[in-house]
Length: 105
Image (cartoon, rainbow, N blue to C red; front, top):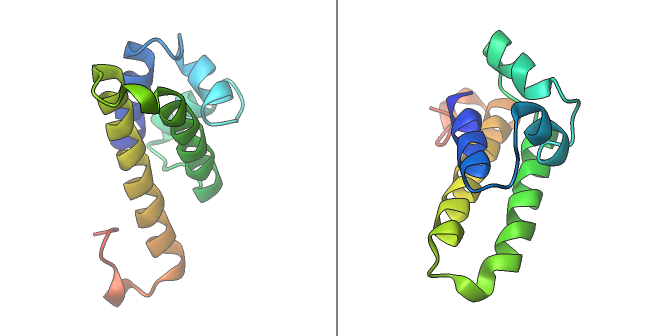
């Protein structure tokens, strides 16, 4: 859960969203209260939600790809990598026997 909030903070600090509700709708493709729910329940987002976030981050990175040396690109790329790690961990927890986990530990 902490990682999703860090991604939200990065996206907000870079000016891509204004609030948790805005992030929930435009970056997670969920209801305006989705991030608040995840935070209050200390719950992890679904695989689908994280995949949608990854796709949105990748789209924004593609737009910024010409300016790879900018701080914005590097911070957004860091958020993208974090989202990929979250997705991989959730995927392992759901589909891989615990004895073979590598990311979800």
